Length: 135
Image 1 (cartoon, rainbow, N blue to C red):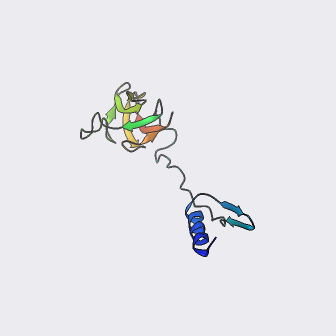
Image 2 (spheres, helix red, strand yellow):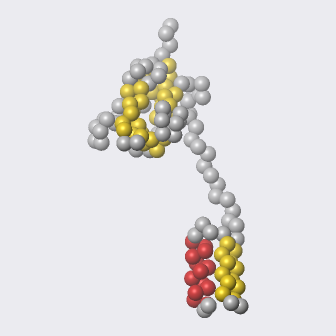
Image 3 (cartoon, rainbow, N blue to C red):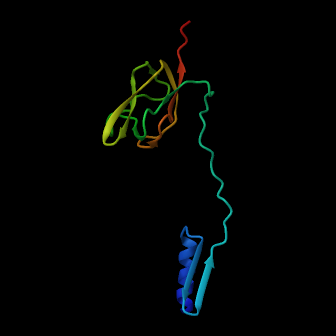
């Protein structure tokens, strides 16, 4: 094995997710190990700026969330808009089916926690709502 081949293998190892590489052929044995890198600082998941006691509208299933009925149309609900319980706030596409997500509370949408066309998980908060006081 020549130096160019070994250099190419080292480059491949460095640019891959493999941490070790062994090669044996007759009397030649090559063992390459990638030095561990310092862990990349992870950004903690964004937390709602509204108090954690505030109710949220959560994803009822896993899928891709769409904030508007169709591309180019206005979103169902803007931040600051009033929403009634049972009112559609977005849709989630799952298994080629569009599923309406309805608000479970009445109030004002204080924060949108997802971007349009984002992948959402089951029970992931989508919106923070400030409930209406019935006083």
